Each structure stands twice: as structure tokens, then as C-alpha cells.
Amino acid sequence: MDLPSGTALTESDNVGRRTRLREFQTKLVERMQAATSGVAVQASKLGVMIGQTRWLLSLQEAGEIVSVGQITKVPLTQEWFLGVTNIRGNLVSVIDLAHFSGMTRTPVDKESRIVAFAPSLSFNSGLLVSRVMGLRNVAEMELQQDEGARAPWAAKQYRDRDSQVWTELDLSLIVQDPRFLHVGI
Image (cartoon, rainbow, N blue to C red; front, side):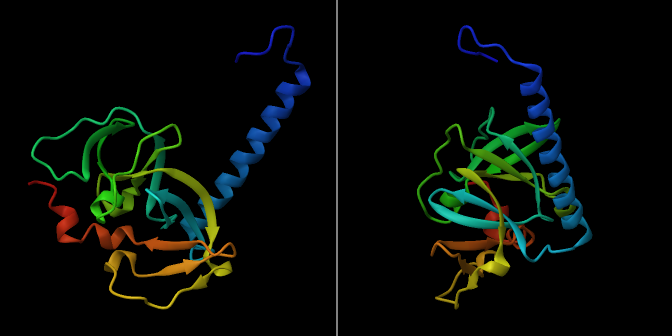
């Protein structure tokens, strides 16, 4: 860690950091256990930005979240299929959902992440997201009326207190979409 010259870490700084880290880890474990047991799963969703749109992912369907590292291109694939990356020894295909949905490509920057699909979906894939925005409680949002034909995997939309629109992404349905499964050109 780089500190301004003349600044030294005190023991209380280290203790404070360890305490905050321990509290964060405890809360994270509680949330993951709640998601696994099915308690409050309907209310808590992972909020992410994909391109310029806000999406909600089920905690039971979203797996590991990792920084964007090396993505190896695969020849003769769709433009929205970015390639494959290695996540903890597993090859995972990386999809740009914004581009798949007909929008502009999702730019990769320091806040970009890959959200892998949960192992329970048996689909080694991940989505490129612009930002992870934390947990969102859909019970505090207003379900929007169906405003037209949307893909079955993006059928529900919510409006939050700040009038931001969030689309719920059902990963278990997108992995059944024939267009999503056909990455070759």
C-alpha cells in the first residue's frame, strides 16, 4: 500500500480495517445463506449495469463476480460472443448482453466485471457488465405494466424510488433461447 511520505499505518488502522472486512464478510455470508435457503430471494436481486441499462439478477442464478481479465476471442462467432476466459480453472464463455440485445457494445473499463452463471444452471457462461450496483430489493420497487413484446428472459420491469427502470434478467430462460445458444456464424 502506498502512503504519503511521513504517514505510517497504526495498529488501530489495521484493527479497524480487519473489523470492517470481518463485518462485510459476515453480512455477505448471511445474504448468500438467505439466497441459498430461499428466504427473501424474491426481494433481493443483484443490480448490474449492462451497457446503459439496469438489470436485476437472481442471487440463485448469478455465480461468481470477477474482474475482466484476458478474454480469448473465438473465430467464426457472433459479435456479441466476446470469447472465453478462465475463472478459477474453468473456461467460461463471455457474452455482451447489450450487444446481443441490439444495443451498442458494453465498454470495458476499471468498473467492468464478468458475472458468471451459477453452477446450478449447468452453463459455463458469464455476462460482461459495466458495473455491479449491489443488492436491490424489488419489494420496494413498482412493477411496470407490460409495455410491449420483450424477450421471455427479460419480461419483468420495475421502477425504483429514483424513477430508474430495472429489467429482471432470468438466466434460466436465456440459456434456453436458441439465438443465445447459437454463437457460431
